[in-house]
Image 1: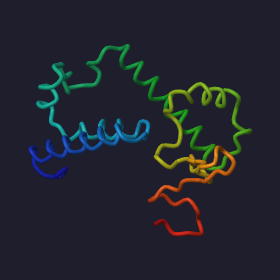
Image 2: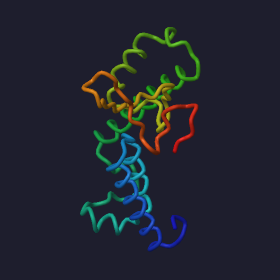
Image 3: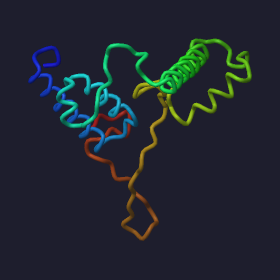
Image 4: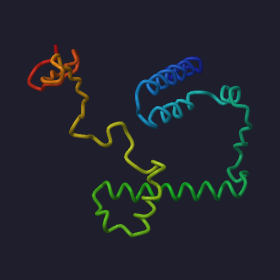
Length: 162
């Protein structure tokens, strides 16, 4: 539907947003749902967005028609983000982090809370252990305890689930 006509693209947008909202309500994928919804906005045409958000779209005649402060601010933000992403990528690709200049390490530390230059994706950091809660009960006032196994959850690795 994404590559078809306007009405089907709108339906695709609504489907994607509904699915992402459902996932966000039932799971924790941090910012990934919001990124997907933001990308889905490109499925809507300008008239539809203007109907939902009354704003004026600047003329497309020249980017120089923007105020100077916006051009300078956008350029500075883009340059900062590109520099931080390049530093982070060089560290990930094997460049020894200890050999990075001090200002680069400090800037990465300052940018870390914003999560704008880091490994994106659901499974960027994989753990090797999975901590699980076990429910136990006792029939003889706490002398012997028995672990309750969940029916459809694999717990013992040498036994197939029920």
